[in-house]
Length: 251
Ligand SMILES: *Cc1c(COP(=O)(O)O)cnc(C)c1O
Image 1 (cartoon, protein in one colour):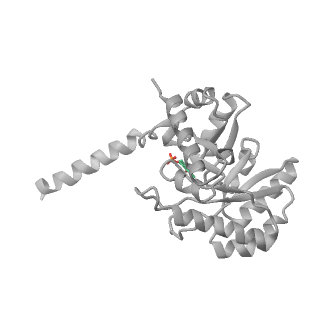
Image 2 (cartoon, rainbow, N blue to C red; image 1 turned 135 degrees about the vertical axis):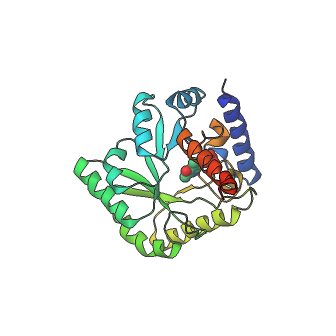
């Protein structure tokens, strides 16, 4: 028995409270329910509670799910898009959150041109500078943005970021405010509106709302924890443990 509906209600209450606490209209914060790793049936149940926007991070997984779900749903790609997957991805998603490379955006433009499409994207920024994170360096983005705004079929709606993982829900605040300030600078520099700020996940969306987030991407607070790694990994870890513990006996 899933509690999706009560999770969703509780989440919406927290979103409303966070928006009101900083004098924002809760309608200005859109919720993308991140359904990666969860089966289509779970998406169907959450959609039945009135949720429309869902997020996926792998093209192959999305190809298995999106076509068998109601066409009224809206899909967001929140992962790292590889250029060889652009053609498959374009018809599936209404917004691409994680575009982190000018060449990728230009390839999307070219393939949109060929297939008579347009697409909407957010540029991912690595605000924290962590080596493990994808995203434009903020200085680099200032240089390349004017060129990317000239693309005709790829429409840049704003910026996206992920804060470093932390147990402290407020630790992410400085990263979110840095993204908003960068957006304000880029807006002044280029004249582009860049209305969307995609920031905030299950652990930090309240801080993101306080810093001006317009789209939050929330998975585990709705669907519960994601499934553990596949059993073959667990089995390998188990073997490793046995080998490690037997070393003392062997030598
Ligand atoms: C998985 C994921 C999320 C959702 O994370 P939760 O902590 O489950 O809310 C949000 N954004 C991105 C980019 C993700 O990969």
